[in-house]
Amino acid sequence: MGRKQTKSGKIRLTEVAKLAGVSPITASRFFRNPEALSLSKRERVDSAVKELGYVPNLAARALASHRTEVIGVVIPSLTNNVFADVLRGIYDLAPHRSHRRRDPFPHQQRIRRCVARHLRFFRR
Image (cartoon, rainbow, N blue to C red; front, side, top):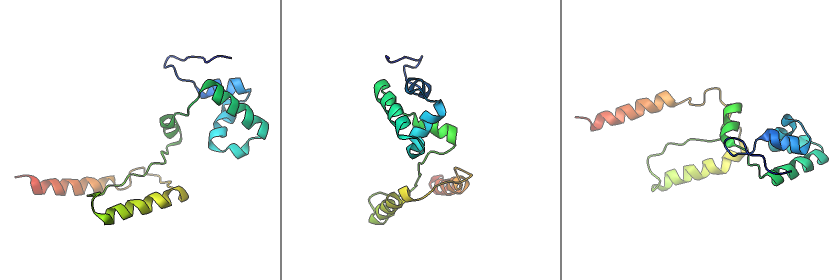
């Protein structure tokens, strides 16, 4: 079976599911939690993914799940070793932690205040 083009030219998960002979939910589960599928279903979905050249759309996943698995860090300088060490610590611990929060920007107001104060020092 050949590659089916959509308007955008991208393969969709539903096409992978159809080729593998599984439901779209099962195909989605293959990427999120492959251990939940039987070996035969995993192999069929994997084969369909490779045949079609499917690449999951991380932006679509983030929109649908309301999670990005991205951590934002604001630091004043990368040249200061203290901040580089902080970033290294975050990088090392991040894969082992769950970063779920109800508010995706819990410190947004605080950051705006800091930026506003900082800008006031430079205004005349």
